[in-house]
Image (cartoon, rainbow, N blue to C red; front, side):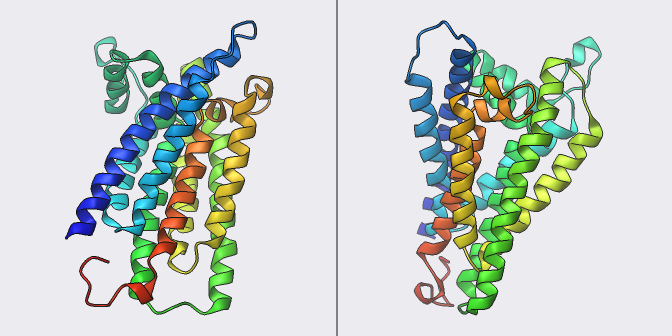
Length: 285
């Protein structure tokens, strides 16, 4: 029972710390890039980088055990679904009570940038995509450790399909999630149809992509590297990409980098301990 406990501890602490650093750094970085005449402070970018490393570490805890990633992913997924399904508003003002929005308001008392970054993370669908992927990846890797080695042809096929699905999930985030969160926070318009498409489409693409780690991690690694490159490119100058590109806000907050770090950490974590290293009777799979 040591591995499950350690995986849960590492995944929980690293995920929380990484999300906090990346949210604060992303909000600070975007605010800094919006001020064209202001001085350039490397602090927010450093926070994004460290946060991304911690997020990758949380996903990489799959190398120890699948439980930690499963629990952390479930928390992300539930919060993501609640954020998209229930529009924010003050119940005292006649709006709909949103538990996720109330959570962000609590963090606003601690740090404004932290609350801003977490709001975009939750209401853009990023939390949903990351959470569903982690849950599916945990189940896929667990199944891989229980099964014999997959045939080369099947592994190659699922690798290509899995990588394509994860890139599809990124596209949903950038174009649909980006549009949804811009409308929600800038014009206070809630599009329920768009939210449903993000939940069903983004969740399905990320979930199936995670499950396909059952056969191979190669496609997920390649897709993760592509996502990270896209994340860095958008982070460098997000303001010039808008308004033609709806994902500029998500990218400017560093959330594309967070998504790529999650994909990469889980894919590499699934490679560390194969079936040959896990006896069938071992309770610490």
